[in-house]
Every structure is written in C-alpha cells, then in structure tokens.
Amino acid sequence: MDFVTRRKPVEAEARAPGSHHLKPTLGWPQLMAMGVGAIIGTGIYTLIGVGAGQAGPAVILSFAIAGAVCAFAALCYAEMASLMPQAGSAYTYSYAGMGELVGWVIGWSLILEYTVVCSAVAVGWSGYANGFLASHGWGLPAALAAGPWGATPGVIDLLAVVITLAVTGMLLIGTRESATINFYLVIFKVVALAAFVALTLPGFDAANFQPFMPFGFSAHEVDGEQTKIGVMAAAAVIFFAFYGFDAISTAAEEAKNPGRDLTIAIVGSMLACAAIYMLVAAAALGAMPFELFAKSPEPLAFILREEGYPLVAVLIAAAAVIALPTVIMAFMFGQSRVFFAMSRDGLLPRELSAVNARGVPAAVTILTGVCAAAMAGFLPLKFIAEVANAGTLAAFIATALAMMILRVQRPELARPFRTPLWWAVGPLAIFGCVYLFSSLAGLTQVMFVIWNIVGLLVYLAYGRTRSRLAGT
Image (cartoon, rainbow, N blue to C red; front, top):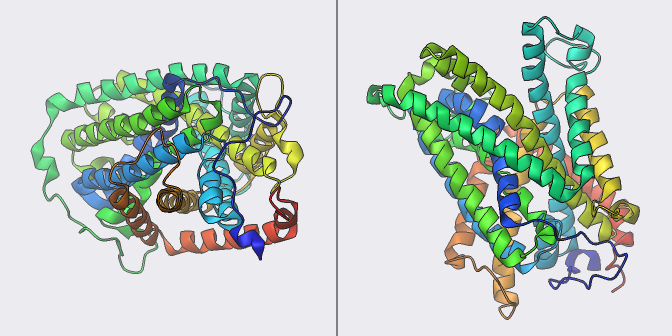
C-alpha cells in the first residue's frame, strides 16, 4: 500500500539535456492573457442569462460569491505554483502534499475537466458559426452540422472538429507563438465587453433590481425539477465562468520567472475578470428586467438589439465566436501539460512526455486534440459537461489542502509568493468549494464519482506499478 503515501519531491529535478522538460518561454503578460482567455468565454456571454433565471437580480451576488471562492483558491494556487514551478497544476501539488493516490485522482479529474470543456466550447462555437454561415446562405448539410445525439441529430459536428484540430495545430507551432495569438484575441473580446457596458449603462434603471432575491439564497429544487434555483444554485453554475486561471499554473514550468510571473498572472487574471463580470452583470440587469433576457442563448446581444443597437449586437456575437477558440486553447494547453506531467511521472505511458524541437510535448498535444475533437464531433455533452465543474472544485480543494499541509510539514521551503492569512484563506477556499459542490445537481455528483471509480481502476491496473516512485 506504499502507493497511497509515496510523494513527489517538492524540489524540481535537474534539467538534464534531452530530458523530458519544457522550455521557459512565457512572461507574465502571456500568462495573464492565457488566464483571461480561459476565464472570459462562454461564461459571461451565456451564463449571465442562465444565472439570472436561477437567482434574479441577485445573480450579481452569485457572481461575487463564485468569484470570492475562486479568489481564495487562486491565492493557494499562486503559492503552490511559485513553490513548485513544474507542469501539472493541482495534480503535481496534490502528489507532493498528499501522496500519489490523491495526486492521481486529481489528475484524472483534471483530464475530465479540461477535455470536456474543450469539447463543449467547440460545440458552442460550432453553433454560433453554423448560424452565421446559414444566415449568409452557406449553411452546412444537417448531417455535418451536429453529432448523432444533438438536438437535431446528424452524423458529425464538422465545425466543432475543425476548430478543435485548428487550435491543436496552433499549439503545435510553439508555446510562445500560440500565446501571442491568444494575447491579441483576448484584447478584442475585452474591448467588446467594454463596448457593451458603455452602451447600456446610460439607460441604467435601478427598478430592475426589485425584488433583489426573488428565489431566496440557498439552492433548492422546485416541484421536483432537476434544476435548482436560488443565489447559491446560480453561483454553482456561474462558477464555470470563473475557473480557467488554474490553466496558468499548468504552464509553471514554462514561465521565465515563476515566482513573479505566475503570481501576477494568477491573481491578476482573477481580479481583472471578477471586476469585468460584476460590471457587465450590473449593466445587463440595469438595462432590462432579468425575465426578458434570462432565456436567451445570447443574452448580451439580445439586450443590445432590444436597446436599439443591432449592429453592435452583431459585433458582440462576433466577439463571442472569437472568444471561444481562446478558451479552447487555454484548456487544451492545460490538458496537454497535465497529461505531460502524469506521463513523465510514469502514471501514463512515458512516451507521451517527449518534447519536440519547439519545446512542445507534441505527442500528448495531438492526443489531447484528437480526443477533444472526437468528443465534440460525436458524443453527447449535455450532461457530461456539467462534471467539469465537479472536477475543478476537487482540484481547488486539493490545492488548498496541499498548500496548508506543506506550510505545516515543510515551513523551511522558499516561497516566492506566500498566501496571506493562509490559515484562513485555505479553509475558506475548501469550505466554499465544498458548498458549491453540494449545490450541483445530483446527477453531476454521481457522474463525477463514476468517472473517478473508472480512473482508480486504470491507476491500479497501470500507474501503480509503473510510477517512477514505485519501489522507492
């Protein structure tokens, strides 16, 4: 049973020539853009409507709560990323702080989170793109517009596959090059959100905020329905709109100055996105009663059209289409680095951690892209996508626990960034994540458990005996 307790060393291994290590090519601007690119995506463009339908005007409080939980978690991530500037994010931190078995569970959860997010966002992008093509008379045949289990069943969601593979190709070009493309795309979508706020704030009507909390605070079901309502129910869903900063920590090994760059990027992207979300939510709620835009699949564009800005509404929709590939890029980058770290540690085939001349783990990046493309093209994602939230919450809890454990067991370690009031921030992050997890739909929780049971069987059959630490 030594596999339960054996731990990954906190100290980084020496970078031997030709070894399985990544090149440090990223500064804090590229890392922060990666975080903003991952955080600002489908969340603010669509979930503001879903959240308003669950919480009413108090959805702005839901944004604040979800953002606060993520902020606590981000502070824990910042310390661990600067302490252990190695690929793998929460998987690596859990492995070092709590042992190999916990590390595997968290790594397996991250594989689910990142791959499903990539696939789900690709399907969302395909929906926007198919709508745009159809409006210009270039619509794809029904067989190529959706997978077999779509609302309108087809054969394959071709555009979802294409965008997923295109992002894979960009990542293969090189880490720095793909980060630069992401940087400019992020600027475009932030400018689009600023335009939304500038146009809607002048017509702000405080009466739209009454009653402020029509569905109460705690998450609860109505008439036995699966969907919960209440401020916390909305926060549990809106949480999806905030996570993404954890993808930054997967790039720890590729940061030029980890102690400085990772801290600025993780904390900075969270603060920037929280401020943007709160401002956009306030502007949307002030523009019209939440009942009017809550059911729209494109609430921000809907509000602008109703306010008499049809051209800007088109631009906002276009910004959403441009925003989605940056989300795919950030999460696919993170997924490939988690795969890379687990492979390098022997828990997955070690051949996957080979790095090419451009400093990219090409094999694992291609594997990630192909798996995400296959899911986006063929598989039903309606229910599976919700499990991404559960996997992320598990990773956040594990990172906070690892931070606190190492503070107690290894106080002598040099920490370029130290979580302020760690004895309070860590427990608050854990409590917040546990509460959000309890607010998720029961089916989501069950699917998360099933996924990890499958993962445990894979670990016992393969990783347990092939781990680099086996026998040490």
